[in-house]
Length: 232
Image 1 (cartoon, rainbow, N blue to C red):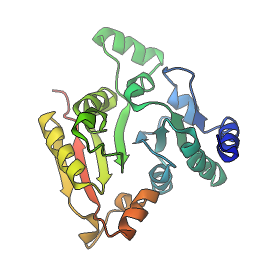
Image 2: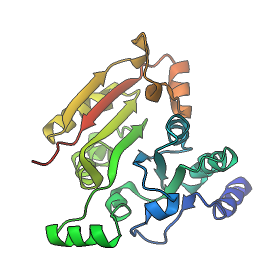
Image 3: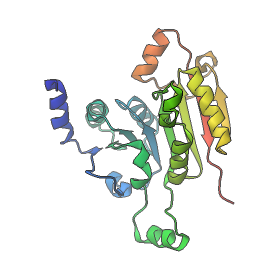
Image 4: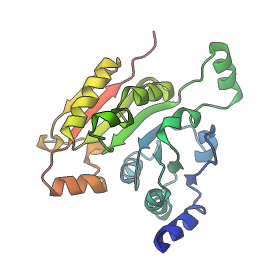
């Protein structure tokens, strides 16, 4: 392993804004952030470009970047500490275990969950930015908008919760739209080529490292916004 990676792994262990559980377990996010502000997740966040960008725009919300690669998280976590972004955290975890990290653990919510025989979702919003499209059909289940992942998101998203997707891969984008509809998500917005818009919302102006590369290669960026149906 390169010395640079070893250095990052050693340093990231000292970062107060990085959580690295030995095994999937509930985390008291209210205690970690010191408030009960709404939490937004960025999945497969890489260096955390979107997590940081959103945190700068919305200081009264909390943001958690999630990735399994510690060396990637190092950059975002270090930047957040240097900029004193107290509303940013990073979680080193596998996305298929998401629901194990986001279950409220105070007495009231445990009692409600017990009475309803289900855990209570606490996340209002998720961002998925430029994920691996896994183009081969045999890898479809690994796509972050596949039915199995959409089902996981339903468990942690609040009723009416939102998922945002940005991607340069049109085939993956179309797959995500079709799968969302098939899995009973409400399609709120579809934008092909976001930079064709005269005015771009602030939360879509944030550019990840990968987005910058795609734009240099004259690729179009597509955006999908879907909503979890509220329970009746």
